[in-house]
Amino acid sequence: MRNILIALMASAMSLAASHASAADEIVLQLKWVAQSQFAGYYVAKDKGFYEEEDLDVEIKAGGPDIAPEQVIAGGGADVIVAWMGGALVAREKGVPLVNIAQPYQKSGLQLICPKDGPIKTEADFKGHTLGVWFFGNEYPFFAWMNKLGLSTEGGADGVTVLKQSFDVQPLVQKQADCISVMTYNEYWQAIDAGFKPEDLTVFNYSEMGNDLLEDGLYVLEDKLADPAFKESMVKFVRASMKGWEYAIANPEEAAEIVMDNGGQDENHQVRMMGEVAKLIGDATGKLDTAVYERTTNALLDQKIITTEPEGAYTTEITDAAAQ
Image (cartoon, rainbow, N blue to C red; front, side, top):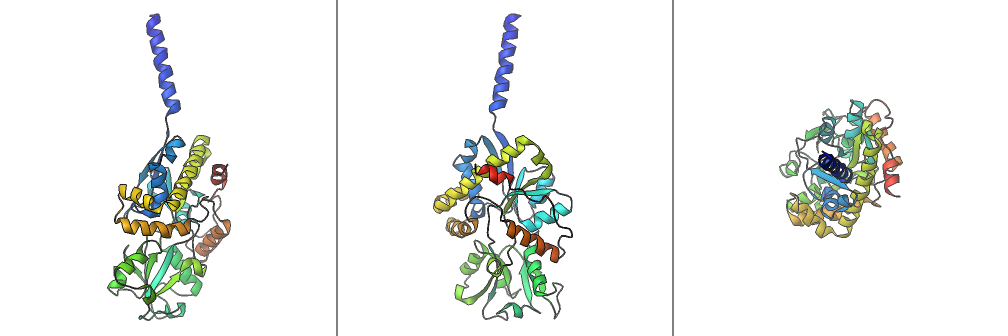
């Protein structure tokens, strides 16, 4: 009997030790498919930065039919990559998302138009068709049009909004006078499709002061009340930003890692990594509250959200990660 008790105690101690040393499991839901837009996370996993923080991170790629806000609301992720416009809309609708870090400190959003077309300046938008992505990506565009006093319902006094595909075909097929692109992705698709830089009129959201925050990290507010989860997020953000630093310093290797995880066209991924690096800023992941306020004000002005958000972000995670 004594031997049995000793064996049981040893087994219990061993089980307790294994639980104590088990890595924290975290599921990250990306906003789009595997590409260098998310290189920092793939690099952090591949180079063992998450493992060093005792984290077991699963990275889920997104796609045209995947809304990260819905995934996390349904319990399918612990943390998501989302644009702030979509996150604040989801928060107002009852999904209490909180921004815990802002790896992308600048916007990569642009509107491009052929120079031989009718659009030369913002004054030329009226009465024309402009391509825009939806699924939460439309909010910066609608805020911009509101700022210009242009209706998005069509007609001579406004603009016609084309629900754009996630490529440059609407421009190639002349379905729209201008289309939305990201500096690191679709802009280069347009170049590869035969457009030359000098043949395009480019409206860059950041340069115009119309940029809204993109690709932030969000969790559910109630989860942050758990000290263990909060500590896991500190470690996750610290390792992720280390991944971003490495990716920026080693763009070709970062692109290879993305390719190993389902990315397409290595040359495109290397080029994308170079453009993404320009948006990461100081690689601290800290939220610029001035840009946050500009984002919320633009959404409120357009009535995309109706009330001033409270508790929609915290700097505690990035502050702790920097220590």
